[in-house]
Image (tube, rainbow, N blue to C red):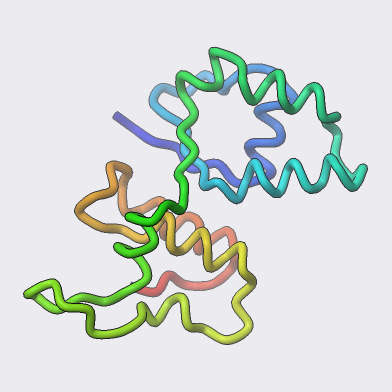
Length: 138
């Protein structure tokens, strides 16, 4: 099944329009997208208001097809470290050690880092990196 990665702007448009695009498959975003939308609403810089956000975010249509990927303890452990073939930790993942990387970008990298445990396509990590204007780090 095809998965479409949603940016913050995509998710905001989806919630404001009150309907999902006609595309088949699932929609995926990281926990950062709804957090950033909520932040812009609370600072009065969004086309949505708080009640619209909550009602659409909780709607059955959105909740059935939108998966919000968290940064839970398992995801953090899996993504934060490089492991040897015997699964010993050999160091921090270089992609999260970059100086000047904003925290929201670090969180997105950790959540979307390709691994055997993630169900979405590896290309979604590359798509996120492309939105940010930099090449993907392995």
